[in-house]
Structures are given as C-alpha cells and as structure tokens.
Length: 561
Image (cartoon, rainbow, N blue to C red):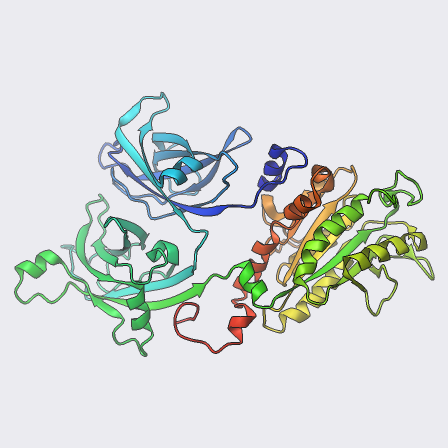
C-alpha cells in the first residue's frame, strides 16, 4: 500500500487527508560521541527512520564524517510535514565501517533518539542526549536537529568553485583541499550549507558542481552574509585550515554577470598569517566557476500565467458493469441518486472546469459495441461525433453519457491504452509549442483491472514525458490490487521493456474508500497530486509561466546568469 493510501485508510472512510502543509529540511550535528575505534576516532553517520504502520522504515542517511566525535553533517533530510498527523522519527548514530545507503551489521551503534517531527518543527532546534539500546545515556553524547520550513522556497542555485595556488599543508605531497560553505544566521551562529568532496593532491582543485535551495543558502535573503572555508583534509579528522573569505549571494550574482567574469574570485585568507606575515597576500584564490539560479514556480504561477487545464473523461462500458436497465448495475440511472460514475465525474469535472476557458471537455468511452456496425471500440466519442468529441461543460458530459447508455452494447475487454495514447498525441502537439499553455488531465472511470496492462504501462511511460496527468477511479467492489502497479508511489513504473517513467503521473483511487465523502472531499483527494505534477513537468522542461516567458527578460532572480 502506498504512503498516500495508508494516510487515507488511517483516517477512516469518508475522511480525506489534508494536503501537505509544509516541506521541512532537517540539519544534524552531534557532540561528544562514543569512540568505538581503537586506533582512530569514530566515523559517524546518522540514519533517519520513520514509523509507518507500527514498523520503522529507513528513510535516509547522512554522509560519513571521518574520524570525528563532533560531526556536523552536510547532507540534509527533506520531509513532508503534515500538521494533522503524528509523524514519529528515530535518529540512529553509527560508527560506519562500510559506507552505503543502508546500515549494515558491522556498523557500531553509538546511540539514538525518538521524537516526532511536530516536536522538532515546534521547537525549531532540538538537542537530546543519545541513548543506547539499553535505555542508558551514551556517555555525554548529544544530537542536535534543526528544522527549516522550505515550503516557501523561491528556487535553487547551481554553484561550482575552483581554486588556484592554495597553500601546501603537506610535507611530502600537495594538499587535499575541500571547501565548506556557511550561512550566517540572524543570531550570528553559522550554519553549514554544503561541504564539497576532497580533491586529492592538488593546489588548484576544481570541485564538483552542486545544488542548494535558495532558502538553505541564504534564507532567500540575497544580502545575508556567507562564509567559505577551505581545508586540507586529514584522514584522522585533524583538518588543516587553509583560508576563508566572506561574500553574499548578491555579490556572487553580480560578479558572475560581468563577462568574462574577471572579478568572480576571492582571496582565500588565513587571519593568523595576515597578522604575522608582513608581506602576506593570500593563501590562494577561490574562483566561482559557475552560478545559475533556477526559480521554482508554483502551480498558481502557471495557472495565473495563462496555463489552461484540458479535461478528458474516459468511461468504462464493459459488460462487467451490469445491464444499465438493472438497478444493480453500476451504470444504472437512478433519478434520485447519481451512480458512482456520475459522482466521480461531476466531483472532478467541476474543479477542472474552472481552469479551462472554453468549458468544453472531451468525453470518451471504451469496451462497448457501438453503432452502426456494433463493433467493439476502445476509443469512441460518447456524443458519437468522431470529428468533435467535446461536450459543453460538465452537464454536457453527463447528458452525453446518459444518452449514450441505451445506444451501445456493453462488452469488453477493459483496454485503456488506446485512450491514453489518444490524449498523449494531443499533449505531444502542445509540447511542441514550447510554452506552458495547455496541460491535460485524463480521468479514467473503470469497474475493473485493465486487461491490456502491458500496453497501458507502455503508454503511461511515454505519456510521462508530456504535459499530462492520469487519474484512475475504480468504481464498484472489484479487487483493484493490480491497479496499484500503475500508481508510482511505491516505486518507479516501468514499461514492459524496462524503460522507467520520467515522473509519476498516475493516481489510482478506489471510489469505495471515499464513497461517504462529500463531492468536494472526493475531488480534493483525487486531484491532490495534479498541482505537483504540473510543476514537475514544466520545471523539467525549464518552462516559466507564460506571462514571464513572453515578457522581456530582466536580470536578477529567475534568469540564468
């Protein structure tokens, strides 16, 4: 079961989970760790576990800080924070013997703590004594967790640095330099933002490019002071200080904007040398090789920029639904109570129609024998107009559906790949425009597991590259277990050929789980992931909202420097 399904089930029938309130970053450091190594100090890392259905599941792990009893970790944990949930976390510190994503039996346990994400968020900074498995304190060991809300993140920054003529700190070889980037907080404390890799035996290193959120880098304040420190790495943890310099993100942008970047460099200074040596100039020079700022736009940015949401509904007309004339049929038209197909259609359609200026919606059917030859079709217009399958508003779709039922013969099988491919072709034409102007939502209403699963997976993987989302609502009481395979929450969906989906574009919802919910609550649950999917697609294509892409570019945030 996916994490989203677990949340829905835990809240009970008819109750829809609230959307994610925030996204938070957790930064970790430890003090006075136990020393488990006989010849050197411990090599600590921290494992983060999250409790799900009474089981602890590993979520992430920090990097390993070599030979340190007071590590400050560079790797940041990013979590979704739900105000309405108790999210239990466990932090476990290990002396790591085999670096990797998962903890291994050879690692020595140095202590751990349990708390909730809500406690960390409420206090912003939590320091706790580490406990051994026996429940006793692990000596004087502590762990500090700092939470930062990044839901209002204004984007991220790509940076790369290099240096030249650094001081040589090694007697028989050259220095092994690495760089640390710190942010100065409002309370004058320093927060590690990023630590580069170590470049072995070089006085002119070029460090790998890296990405940090603007929030992490400077709390979205371009003039907030930053400090860079360069060290000569020591395997025993006693790193030699080479030098440092101060800057701001604003200064970095200005320097990088000056072609051909003659001033995008800083003297790397050692304050002790500066005091003692009369002719001291620097301990090397650090150069900003590359800077690019990526603005992260919201769903509303795209909608308000003119992006239209085009809504298509596809309805299952297979025989397993039952004879529409029979009150037990899923397609039975009750004048006093809409059937499940209509309930789902109206709930979702009424939301989508607000984002479509012409209020015309494509309405398709599959799995029926249709007039005049009564051949089976898996892609037909329910208004029987192959030249124009659109209906006027949601009410027009409802009327076409009710009019269509007595004219077709319910048959089978349940093949949905043809309709996915049809909408994908329209979305592909939109992709060629190079603008964030049209995004396509396909709502598939079905009473059973699809028959053409291999073709459907192939079609979804192809569609994952297009401005398109697919929502599948399972009506009735069938076993929809296999349909969860199409929802990428539990892993990346792959085509039969093994090609992975570029992004998760499918959401599957069994209607029975929300049968007692209000139409508004139903729509909220079914459409919950669409805003994220819209943003993911246009961000991947590096397409800004139309109102920005059509205006004249100005230097500053949002433009590549």
